[in-house]
Structures are given as C-alpha cells and as structure tokens.
Image (tube, rainbow, N blue to C red; front, side, top):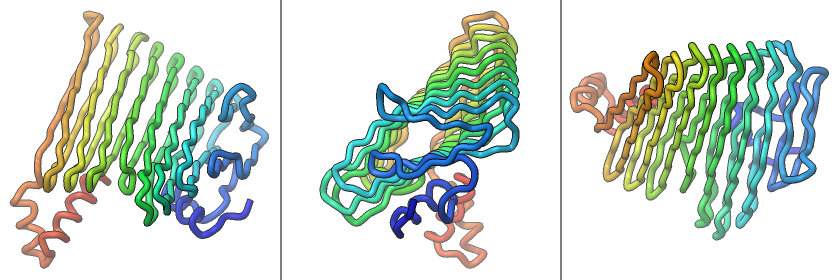
Length: 307
C-alpha cells in the first residue's frame, strides 16, 4: 500500500514506524484493510462474521513482531473492530497496536477496538498500544478500547498503553483472568487537556495458584479535563496482586481514583495505592534555579513522570 503524508505521520506517532512495517502486519485505514503481510509463523485471517481479524501465532515462535495499526482520516467515521490474538504455547513475541485519528472536519470520528488475547501455556507476550489524535477540525476524536485477556499456566503478558495527546474522550476497559503461575504486568500513561475526559477500568481475576498482577497507571490532567481510574483485583487463590494510580493535577483538572482489592482466599496477598496531587513547589524551584522558566520546568517534570 501507499501511505500519504497524514497516514505516515499517524503511523509514526502510534507505532514509531517510518513506513510499511517489516514482518507481519495488518493496517486498517478508515474501516477497511489497507495492507497485510503474514509470515511462516504468524497468520492474519479476516473474520467472516464481524469486522476484524484473527492473529494466530504458532507455538514456539520467538523474537517476531506483529504490527496492527488503525488509521482514521475521515471525519464522521464510526469504526468498530474485533481482533482476536492466539499466542501459541512457548511463543515469545511483540505486538504493536494503536490508533491514530486525524479529524479535519466537524463530525465526530470514533474507533472502538475489542481485542481478545489468548496467551498459551509458557508463552510470553509484550503488547504495546498507543492512541493519538490530531487535526484542525472541530469534530471530536473518540477512542474506546476494550481488552480481554486470558493467560494459561505460567504464561506472561506485559501491556504498555499510552494516550498523550489529542483524544477528546476515551473509556478504556481491561478484563483479565490468570491461571496457575500466570503473570500480567500493565503500565498505563495518560495525559488529558482542554475539556477532554478519560476513564480507565481494570478488572483482574487471579484464579490460579502463584498467579500475579501488577497494574500501574500514571496520568496528568491539565486545563479542565477529567479523569477516572477504577481498578479491581480479585485474589481467588494463593496469589500476589498490586494496583497503583499516580496522578498529577494542573490548572482546573480533576482525577478520581477508585482502587479496590478483594481477597477471596486466605493466601491472597493484595496491595492497592493511589496518589494524586500537584507538582511540588520545590521541584519547580530547583529546575528554575538551573535556568528553566516555570513552564519549561513543568514540562520537564511531566515528561519524566510519564516516561
């Protein structure tokens, strides 16, 4: 496929790609498949009953990457997609997803992605998902990702999700079930500004013995934006769970954090933490003594916080 300038910029923002990816990929553009490549170990199949694809990774696949970016450049488009990922036993792979919206018109552009992950026994998966919005139009840019995860015995999944700019409204929902010895690590980064809103909902069931989850959200709410973080970790066996929300509020921004842990087994060890506040004055003062303006000092602190 040929990418125009807008598409190239979106791809750079959400996947750090300068052009068509190497290896396996599927690019979805304005609701349609715009390009695809499979490999000997990774198959990508179009669903027959609803919009979306199945990504099938053979058992034992090592050190391969799959890119599945979504690009929206039409105003007024409402895109819904269902993607299922099957990570074979003993595989170790990287999947890079994300959605970029360029809205130059007056109508809302929205992408809702429902991603379901089946992580096989002893498999390892790193999943990176970035969301980004731009465009001079007045139409809203809306992204509502849903992630459903099941991890089999001794499987491992690490999720890195980021939304730093340009998304007017988002509701992010993640549900996970872990079997014996399975591990789930989640790192979320969000920044909102203007009148943007962002909600995050995490629910993790630690069903298997020696399963573990570590869920961390870091966010910055600027201007008059609003954020809500809700997390629930259910310890249903001998397990370890930790959920944490760290947030900085600036201007008239607001953040609500609702961390919850349910110990449903006497050997469940669960921790929840939440910290919300403004940038400390001594941090600003220290950086300003080094020659930075107050605004520059704020940006340095925020960049470090969200790194």
